[in-house]
Length: 231
Image 1 (cartoon, rainbow, N blue to C red):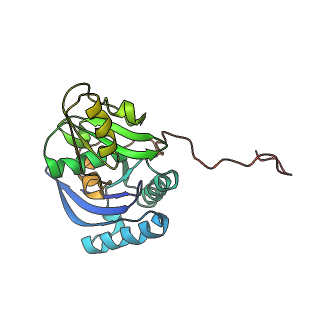
Image 2 (cartoon, one colour):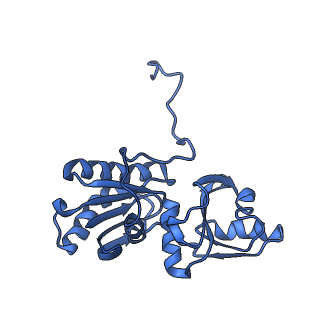
């Protein structure tokens, strides 16, 4: 069984082609690039590149996996739109995973099987956060949340905890003031399609079309007071 996985949620874009055989996922090709804008222009060519490197046609893809958020408003929509379009064209099933679960799975590959919290800077003094057990991205303890830095510092109760993601140091500073033992690490961590492919090997197919997970309304809003009222 072949899996095509990709992500555009945060400051990067990644794609991966992997094979699921006997319950084990092996990567055939992958790319990850870091940038803040340009996801829409880069994703489809990147998918073409990993497919060519894997020497597969799209008719050979059985599962298409994409991150569903949280993330930037536009970035999250790009991956989901691509997944839905490719699924419609190929007949492949789709799988969605939170961007934070994918980050937890990527962190697990680096730091081992440890309970951890993924905390990503969402600006305005808030973070996207999710708590995981020692099983990585497939072992979610909470759903993805939008929390204040202070609330994020309380994730996991009083037990020592590993914090990963762009807000790990900021959250750790507050947690230490609360008397907690915390281990901030991997501040540059972003979702990686390789980790998503590994997750997709054990996740069920979505029974409905993938949709974005937004924990905050978009910053852009319709203009009011113009000559022609907007619906």
